Length: 612
Image (cartoon, rainbow, N blue to C red):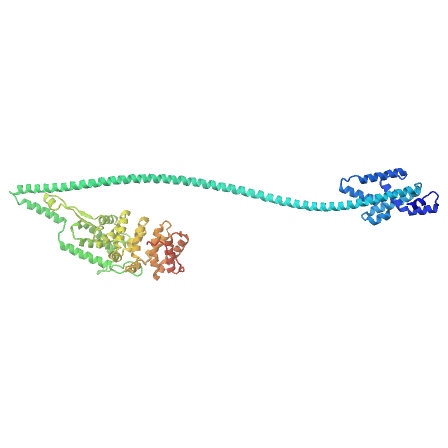
């Protein structure tokens, strides 16, 4: 600084002044640049320059409001305030436009410096020192501002990352909110559906509850009515017993009175007939003659009639069956009668035979059996014809066979009342003889149409089949065809009784093979197939029928009958639709299919109820 002051003294030469000006040209150019940038006037004096420097220093010491403005101002002041040879080592961030502007201003400052030579060198040195101090302060401030700028950049980068993360979170939250709305909508729909279902179920439950209450009330009403009817029955039975006791007493008293009256009448007759004795025997003879005219007393005639009926019946009933259709062969007699002629003769003789039932109470029980057997053969012959209709005769025959025939003698004279005062009854269906009762039951099944009579006849037949004699008679008189016709009827109340009969005969006894042979025909399997296809048949009926079919499926010759009526396919369909709880039926169906070769053997539970 001293050299600078010495060189700028007023006594120095012009050449030295030019050297000094050249030496301090660059710092002065920088100084002029700063003065021009801050809008200072080139012609201002030193005091105004000092005040501008002081103001610049004061502005540097003011607090910085925003980081971006402070940094920009610092860079500009630093670049334009310092000399060019000091700025070259430190400032690296000045743009090309600023440098070009500085060169342009430096040239302008040289011209202005040449013109403003009146400034003292000592003052310029002081200014330079002050500017150098300001430069150092600005350098420190610049470094601190650079550090602060780096921190701001880092913080800005962190904030941007955080902002991006927040945007992602917002997008995620938006998606979650959308999903939440969809979920709430679905939950609302499900809740509405649930409420609707609950409402329907509650209504159905209310209806069921009402129905149960109604059924309970009706059941209670029926129970009360049943109890009242039981009480009435008990009262009526007691009254009946009392009336029966009274009737027995009255009957015994009446019999005593009748005997007494008859005795008194005989005594009077004896007293009045002593003078004339011949007219009385004539009356008795006429009465006996009239009785003989009504009732033939020739026992040999009835014996001959019995032998003839037995001979015809045994000849026709014991004839073998045809192998083709299972029906009886055509009747072959000595005179070669045709089937039609035999049926016509049977139709003519049946009413006459039925008329003879009224005299059966007076004949031997042996005649009863022969008569029933002959009637049974006539019925079998009539069944072969389709044009013969004898409904009234058959109905009368069935009623007399079922109820029996009672003979009440005529009481025209007191003598006849004494000798024939007891009624006689011929029992057929209710007979104690098993052959007579069995044939009578078959006749009832063929002629009677009342369901109650048929049900009682089936029960009687089922009881008789418990003995070997009854089973032998069943096979001898070919009763399978009779019960098979009952199995075809629409009345389902008889199906159980018919199948009970078949179950008894399908037991492993010596009668099993003949029974199976009699069932091995198309008519039997046709009826069974119709029952299996009927959806209204009870499960117990199907179980009983399946037992019989299971026995028949063991015979290889019956496979053609099973396949003829598509019974295996029906059974397979029943297997798919049958409730598994009906294990006994399922076992029998599987056994039938196994014997027919349609399925493989399988194991069955051992706790199945097999009551059949």
